[in-house]
Amino acid sequence: MKVICTKCGGMHVACKAMINPNDKSFRNYTDEAFIYGWCEDCGYGVVLSDVDEVKADIDRRYADYCAEHGSEPLYAQCEIVWKDESFTEPQPVTIKLSVDADDATDKKIFFYCNGIADLKSLADFEGEDFVLTDCISLTTELK
Ligand SMILES: [Zn+2]
Image (tube, rainbow, N blue to C red; front, side):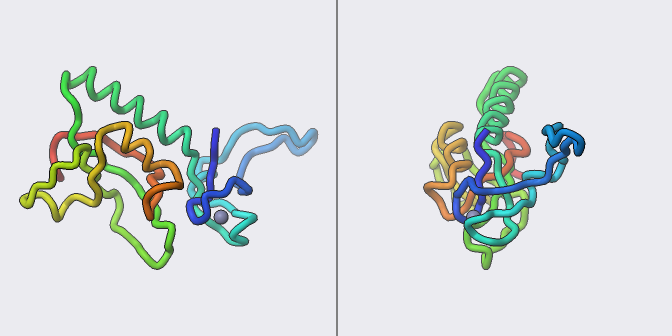
């Protein structure tokens, strides 16, 4: 597990979890634990992302998709967070899993990446101006 602050990429973060109050032992995370948390470095509430879990989820969805359809998906529907909070984006966004630009669909594409490995790298803080926090689905059709 590697949970990061989506604003600074740091790991000095805190999130909601259930503990046994008697011996303070950890039980589990609450459902919203990684949606909103506290970053000690930023000093305010931020969106947290479990990078390893996001990547593992993409691997699972990709394997499931290929097994079910016998072909590779072309697009990914994803949730992203801008590092700079002054930007917002209607969610989910569509990320194309190839770098072939096509004028007919260009307006609907938020970002082009070079396949599944590249998509997974978007979950890392380093790289782009946004962080991929959740892959909702893989598809061959643009919605
Ligand atoms: Zn931070």
